[in-house]
Length: 346
Image 1 (cartoon, rainbow, N blue to C red):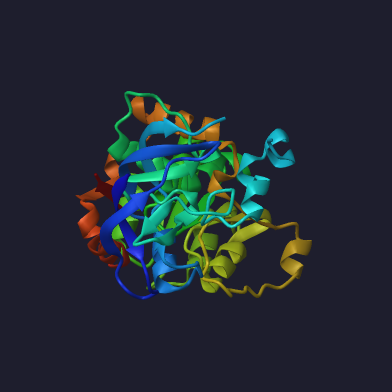
Image 2: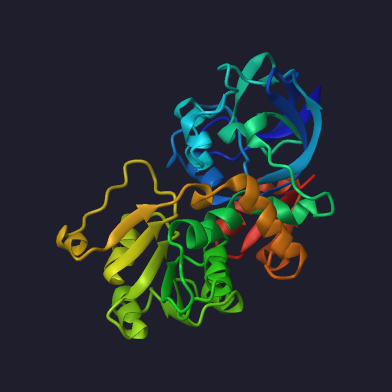
């Protein structure tokens, strides 16, 4: 069948929206008609070259759609043991299907699938493990955000850090992911929730989503500011949602003895951090989170249920709705800090 897709042929170049061929789904695969896909920084990392990836590739991963066809019908030890985000299938290249081949063609040339999703296309074939059923009354052009940015930001709060009521929290980065970390911290009853960013508009958004305090890191030392606001020389939990050496180091330093820092942001390839080991002799914990660090098959429906019952903000995350032909503009808007999240709607 034919589909329209956004294809990246060269790093640091715009994506090309064009007609492609979609092959039939194989065993344990499904054909999905995409309804919407959020504009996420992870795709931009591929465009800039910060995240090396085979080209050409159909980008997109924060997607929601409708399964239209199922291919003919193992679970690994991670899945059996309750850690599906660590699935052994991640050890295989995530730009082809599990048999090592593509389901996209352009003039006979195979195209790679970004994260085996390829959501910037009208249709795509996915491994069945990549598809999570959700309630049928949920608006797909809204809940698509849960499939990456929302769960990536909120999940570490209740899955990885297990923030307790009354705890103090600081979040580095108040964009489309960090705003979810902030509102999840509010939901679990965190006491002080401190947002750190360099853009005044993002700090205002952070207050809308539950931040009790904000720190403009372009005007003051964020570590000293967070330590002072905490009243205890540092907070219980920090979440780094930017992905730079500087911000990761700052987030660790802003915890008190025995505090925990969770890395959520995706760093450019080759990034290294430098920290005094004595920080960890004081029982600080530095950890990370993958796709929320929990059980995506239950966490995604749970967050959608919270939204549908009016207990979680998703509509407020969407600043712009764009067509696939406007995807390059969507990346520009994100870089300029003018949107919380844009959504590509088909």
